[in-house]
Amino acid sequence: MNQSAPNSFRQGPDNRGRFGQFGGRFVAETLMPLILEVEQAYNAAKADPAFMAEWRLLLKDYVGRPSPLWYAGRLTEHFRATAPEGKGAKIYFKREELNHTGAHKINAVMAQILLARRMGRKRIIAETGAGQHGVATATACALFGLQCVVFMGATDVERQQPNVFRMKLLGAEVIPVTSGAATLKDAMNEALRDWVANVHDTYYCIGTVAGPHPYPTMVRDFQCVIGEEAKEQMQQAEGRLPDVLVAAVGGGSSAMGLFHPFLDDPSVAMVGVEAAGRGMDTEEHAASLNRGRPGVLHGNRTYLLQDGDGQIIEAHSISAGLDYPGIGPEHSWLHELGRVQYVGATDSEALEQFQLCSKLEGIIPALECSHGLAHIAKLAPTLDRDKIILLNLSGRGDKDIFTVAKHLGVQL
Image 1 (cartoon, rainbow, N blue to C red):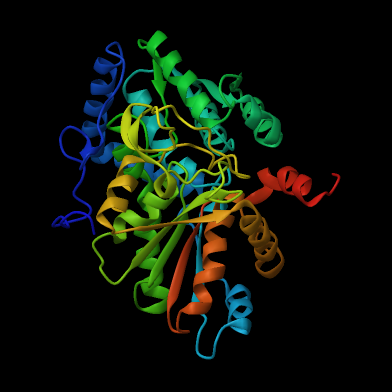
Image 2 (tube, rainbow, N blue to C red):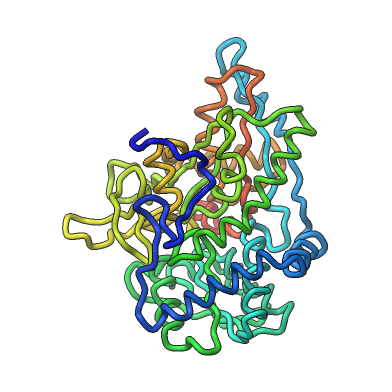
């Protein structure tokens, strides 16, 4: 560990929104009063039993929580078949893909839309990469009769057509962003510009644990429902906590939602899996922790892919949800402390596990969580059979079938 461990890994951030040297607020002066208003509204809302009860009821009756815990028996046996004798950990899935809208994103979106209503905001903006956050935001806005504008990179609009159509069906306006690589980073840039221009009636619903404080903390807190449920469910299923948690990390909301409730449990190891793209030693990946260095982007200080002059390097991943050149600041902090290990999985490794999970478990996983499965394929055969690995299966793969078909040379 590079720093002395804190008394609790769950204590951050400080009152400036910092996790060690990471996080904070680096925003235009015009946005600062609004950011402070969001923080004040959030602090009041989480202390209000009526707000929390309304959110929990929506999670139960509209989203479909708690999401199930699934023992992936056939996948477990598959890896045991080639493992050394006595090796081959048990694999469980936390099935976030069964949530309404098909991913974990809806958990924090529902809370943020309730917060926006509480603040009197009628217009909601969001950024989206793979489209799952955009769909979740459009869904919540449809439910509450709010105007919804989603910024989406033109590259992602092209490769995520089903989600674009879903957002439009739900009444959202989808604005393709053509600047830069026309992906998630650029969509977030445009959303921030829009917010500056429309501060009086607009709420920015951020989809991940990034952005200026309080967003990394707020999105984390609302996603912690994943890890909280998983703790109870593992006790019921196995009578103990898992040995290893695995989750894919782009911005890192699904990983933080699973990891955070377990951070102070020393027996539980945690692995975040970054998109290694065409290889970490190429220039086409999204491994900001493994190949980046600290800098400032989208209102916070965190690890970023950047050149020698500090210019952001475009990220690459087969997964539209992972090709972001940064990561949430709390992940950067946990990386430097050594509490969470961050590794990479390539496009081809994710593609292989996407197909394997579909065939063995009857579950088509999103390409994002297929990166987590790719690490489990390496890890499970090295652990004893009584060890337990828990994967956050954060989204369903329906949205990715066109991308996968193209890579496999299949004409749909």
